[in-house]
Length: 425
View (cartoon, rainbow, N blue to C red):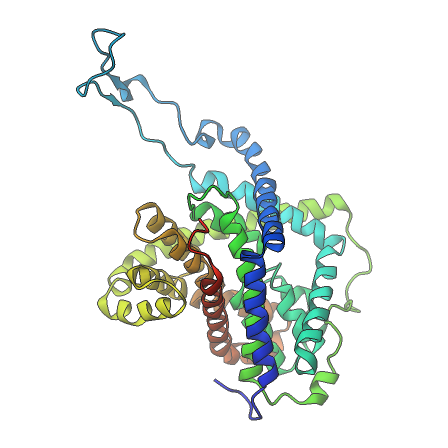
């Protein structure tokens, strides 16, 4: 796994692990900070919920989780005496409550959130966030990490693996092989904020906190970004100081070849809506295709050999042994298929009572990343479009990057399991 020789970066490792534990405790247990994270997640959940206003206009009664029931579907037996309480023979058979179809409620939320993210990028809010996080990372980890490396890890907290290369496109051709590894690993270890409505729709935990899943996905992004830096320094401890000094910039410098004209607000909204539609269609298509592939591979995924390998992995991440087999199967689905299919299976397991809610939250962190085999094609395709001459390098780094990204998610879940209280939900 190690790409270069050199002394082990003890400071980076200790700082990374310690910072991850402190951040986890602060976001989950500290009264002040934990309350702020809850408020942000709830506000984001309510904000995305405004997209539901468009579903009745487009889908009509399909947007109602309780569709109108025809008279033939309702059989009622009324007691002979209305004043008397109904006896055990009096039954009412009604159509069970039907959840909102994913194809109905999901696309409006993704399109709406993509429009918001496009506006934040247009007015430099995301750039400011990345620069602040990059400066904090460099101060925390010291000279062992350069500005462009910190920016690559920080940007993935907000935007996904296909958007970060666009933010760093001015430096992409000059990045070293090790720095490119960090960029790819951070993309595999985190998810895009635009995917929050997807996971929130697929996993529903009855806890009284509507933004619980969103909150833990955001926390997982932050912790995984920290672990990516620490694991990257373990894998590449021999990066030269000259290389680091040459890249002290944050990597967000303007591309000289880019147009100096900035699009207007209307153009940004239209572009964001178009990008959101493409993302929503891609998600639905992936769910259809990989759900079918998962059904074909179900005997392999549910086999005893797979459970023997993946159950200990989930257990070491903090999942109780009674739930380790189920979570291990979900983890294998995330690696072989996508995290979308894994979250779908996790949501079904929660509804069926196959996994404890607390174990489900830990599992949310384990699979909270694009570290799956199909994601390799997505990330390599994005990087190749921006810098095609390094295609062979992308393919060579992909196995190490996806392994590092998976380890970061696994470490994030283990850290959260240490500070997650038993009575959180």
